[in-house]
Image 1 (cartoon, rainbow, N blue to C red):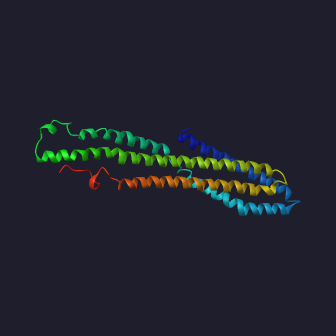
Image 2: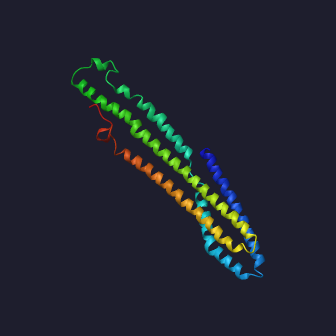
Image 3: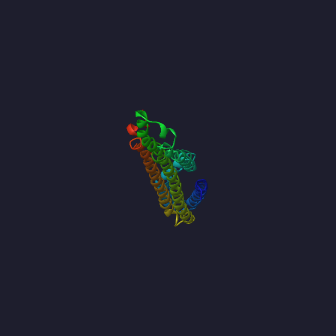
Length: 238
């Protein structure tokens, strides 16, 4: 399944969940109306639990989804950019490292003297610097982009799992809501589902955050691990 298909699946599951929640609320209210006449205290207890425990969790989750609905990320762009760094930067540059080896040019054989010696002495550094473009820059950047893309997909999958758990709880609660005896169990069942959903949001957001921080650390590390670049700069011939 492609990232685009996973995201579409997430949106579809959320829409189904919202529809299920609306049907549950309708069944809950209908049963409340029926029992209010002869078991008002049961209705009162159920409504109190619903308003004080269930509604806050419900609203918290809905608000979170509303805030993130249009900013779920685009991992395909991360993967595409990672591939570009490898194929358009790392590979073509590293393939030219051999051109910095002595003997590639006629002048390498005919040029003599102090200047020629200094030039030849620096060829190895030039070759290492060219190789470093791929090994130390392009590959590190590509790996960081891949981590972020994978983190976004993991985040999506976690949300889908949370929606699945919540959907099961809402289905069970809907079955309870149609009977007088099952009504008191509805709010706790729904609360369990919304709490589990929020738990999945928190957990997978933590995974995404961790992968993003690791990618950031990798990029920052490039500046301190410039083995192919004396004095953290491209080697000179002078």
